[in-house]
Image (cartoon, rainbow, N blue to C red; front, side, top):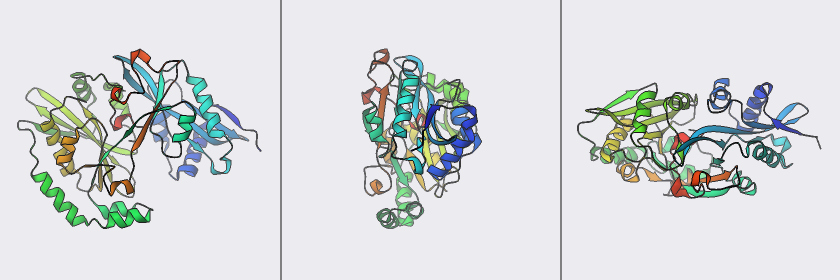
Length: 359
């Protein structure tokens, strides 16, 4: 068996990481993506990543996505593990565990915690290394083109179920729902192709919530929506005194089917429902080419989403298309209550898709 080297990321590892990503994930990522997510991340002064090398070649990686977090009324930085990889020829040799242990050792005491949304394969490894489950999180879906979604799936049962939902019938159903949904009078919807960082931050500051969430300011908005995997458009609701709410919609780039996510919303808890209805109505009308709309577990009340035919991922046949997300957290200190906040309590979190590294 090879003698593996497990160490922190070095600048010369960049091309090896991207090559490993293509091998393991089957997706070619650009240098722009790496710059945005890791090398150019404004919240750390280095690339937070542990790598494994075999005779000088990267065969494993455990990166961390840094986010500014508001915790107990104060700002801090927390990590989100993502893009964990081990080359197929080097699996079942304990490399994932070794990288996790090295990562925990490196960042313990310097940062308060990391949180993640692992899949079924990596979830048990997170628990093994000290993470605790916060909650199961349901997202909300509106399927515009069942045939397109079915074509993008490899699961035969999913294909049969999704194909059975005739697109014209779905379109007619949504048309009736949309026509009977009333929005807010006296509000004008304005769209911006570049994130209006100053306006979004100003709206956020009108009602900063207590729950753990990404701390939003101008720098955050300018950086966060540079992810090249998505094209973002901001929808602002302008009242008499200026913008009162906004939703940022992100549409997938280069995928087989077109997905539009309601990536973020401000203010997070106090936006009037009629205003959100007005914004969502405009988003749906503007994205006629979208096959699938997805709304986050938090941020937009289900009472609003339901008006437009969104359903939780636990509603058949959606479990054949997707599944609930498991939210886990691990302290990097000797306490699970940094700043007096219990990070294992789901009621203490308020997360949209903007806190997820893949949105």
